Structures are given as structure tokens and as C-alpha cells.
Length: 291
Length: 243
Image 1: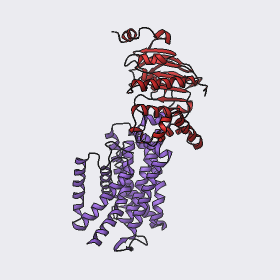
Image 2: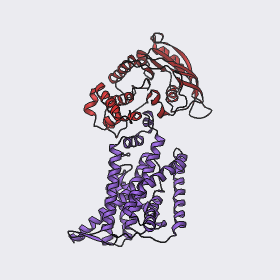
Image 3: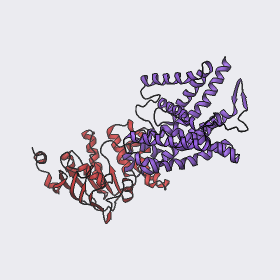
Image 4: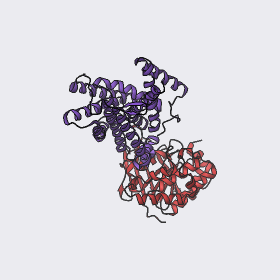
């Protein structure tokens, strides 16, 4: 029994780390920029296929792809910001939502055209291997994906906390006009922030693709997970998003160990409802975004 | 420290938030270096709107804003610092989740390529306002109103601006703290800076003014040296309000 619990906890933590990076980009874009980026999961999906294609065509290990995805998807995010977001960011939020929904549908359909709806997996040399740590058997691929996710989260947190640009991004989210008055080019920095959010999505997609099968259609599933993490953790805080991701991961593995997998969603969303009723801001202590 | 500040000149500015419905209807104004120029007027006169135009937050529909010989009318807000123009906005403008020292450091955002100079500028602000030093690691949003105002002023001064646009600095402050803020403005004036001040506290603003403009319904009404406004302030204000 204890061994089973240990495995559930270990698995849950590793899964939770991956959920956390799926949610952190979404949380920060929503918290700092007020943009509900429903296309976030489409970029997660593209991240999975990015790793898939690099592995299939060039034999590049997904671990390398995880790092390669960051600048590639950052650039994509900046382009999306300049082409699309700038046109809707000052409009009513519904317009932004519709625009991002359209982008999500576009990307999913482009993905379907490119890769069909067939499910893919990335089978690296270590995919079917596991490691024994005491009584716990851990799949190598989950360990690696979890470690990469943790690395990205820590790097992101450190960037926002300890660099001047990171603090300027946080300042922009706390008081946009004051940021402008001290000389911050908020448009430029907003593009950086959005790019970072999409970069997180791309890298998250690589990590998820290492662990789970994927197709263009699975992006909607990742959207649900990402929003669950964001709502649970509160907006715009990397630490809270990490905790929320871990909670989701642990609950998923715990519930799946004792009940049919379909019950996972039921338990998670009931829990979310209870938490939102009890604490309107999710797990976050602040009633408003705490960046 | 003496700063060689430029003259600020506003000429025939028409501006508003809705096209075709201007708040400012041809305002003219000059703010000289080493002087505090005060803008007064009833609510809705366009005082804060004028500061928004000068600081780039609201582009004018017509008219110009010149800093010495440079036309800054259409510069976006983030480029005003490069021209030495800094705005202290109305209301609280600290970044509440950032610490005091992080707030002050962000005032030097345009100096970020020279980290040594930025560090020295931040240290100079902590030396200028020593009561902020023990608070430097506290979240700015947790401070009192007066302390937050001190952080805002310190942040404002990091890039050593020559022109200060001050919008209602005493709002929400106790009379004692407001008086300290005004004393600081006088000290900044004596350093040679060009200061444009908007405040609802007519008596306090006139008390520090070197020159006063009164706006009414978006237009220039009366103007003059401080002495011209040191008479019956109550009657003056009643006159503005038409009561």
C-alpha cells in the first residue's frame, strides 16, 4: 500500500510539473495582459508535433527539442502578437476571445491537414525504460519530462523575479500607465510577454508529447487542463501555477489509481468548484492578480 | 545640484477623449525652468487632460507641445523620459507587488543599458529619501499613502528629468504629508527643474506657485504671478464655479 502511494505521489508530481508548464504561459498572459489565449493549447499541440518531426526526420532527441522549441515558439508568439493581438487587445474582451478562438480552430485544422487525426507518439531510446528509486518505479520519460518542466518553471520564475525586464513585465501587469510613464514601451514588452507565453506552450507540448500520445484534436484536452491549473492557481503567479499543477497531477494519479479514468475529470472539476466557492481567487492568496 | 531645464510651451492645443468632443479647446501655456507653474480650475476644466497631452498619453487633435525647440506633441509616453519629461500621475502609481527598491529601480528603465549608473541613481534616491531605506524590501503596496508618494517621487527622479509634470500630488494624503510633498516640489524647483503642477488644493498650490494658469471649460481663463492670486481665494474659486 505504501509503495503504491509512493508511486502515485511520484507520478503525480512529475505529471503535475508538466501540467504546470502547460498552464504557466496561459496564466501569465491572462494575468499580465488580460488576454484569454484559448489558442494556447493549439501551440502546445504544435510543440508536440515540433518534437515529433524533429525526431522523425532528423533524429533529434525530444530533450534537445524542448530547448529548441523555446526560441522557435517565442518568435511565433511575437508574430501572433504583432499580427493579431495588437488588433484586439484594447477591444472588448469578447473580441479578443473570438480572435483567439479563431486562431485555435485555424491551427487545429492546419495540424489536421498536415498530420491527419492519427495519434502519434514519440518513442525515444528511453521511452520504455524505467528507473527504480527505492520501492518506486518511475518511467524514465516522465522523470525527464518532469525535470525539464521544473527547469523551465524555475527559469521563468527567476526571470520574472530577478531580471529588470522581468520586473518591468510584472510592473506592466500591475499598473500599465505607470509603466509607460517610466519609459517602458508596453507594446514591445507585451510582445515579449506573449512570446514567452507561447514559448512555454511550445516547450510544454514537447514535454507532453514525450509522455502522452497526441494528435491535432488532443489540443482541446490540454486547454481544459491548462485552464484548470490557471483557475486553481490564480492568475499571473508562477509559484501558484506550479502548486496548482502539482495538485492537479496528484489528484489525477490518485483518482486514476482507484477509479476509472473518466472519474478524474469529475473529481477535479468538483474540487475546482468547491475551491472557487470557498476561495474565489483559487489557491492564490491575493484577490487580484499577484505577479 | 543645478539642472539646465528647458522651457515647456503648449500652443493652441485641442484634445479630447472622443473625436469631435474636445476637452481642451485651444490651450496655451508656458512653463519656465526653475519655476513652479500651477494649473488651476474647476472639475472638468481639462487640467489633468492637459498633463496627459503633454506627457503623451493623449495625442492632441491640433496644436503643439514644445520642449525648448523640440516638438514633443506626438511622442508616445515611453519616449518622454528620453526628452527629460517625467510624469507623476494622479492617484497611486506604485507597482504594488514590487518592492520599494524595485519600484525605484524601474524609474531608471531607460538607463538599463548602464547598470552601474542605474545602481548609483537608485542609491542616490535612497540617500535623498533615507526614510525609504529601511522599507526598501517591502512591497510598495503595503506602505502608507505618504510613503507610497515618496516612492513615486523617488522613482520619478531616478532618470534626473528636467521637466516634472505633477498631477494632484496631495490627493489622499494627510495635510502634514501633503505639506512635505509641496516642500519637496519647491526643493526640486530650486534645482532648476521646470515643474508643471495640477492640484485641487488651490491654497496649497498657489502657496508654491511662481505662475498660475486658470483653465475653465478647456480654455485659458486668467493667468498671472502668484501675487495676483493671493487675495480672496474663496471668492476666486466661487467665481470659477459660477456660484
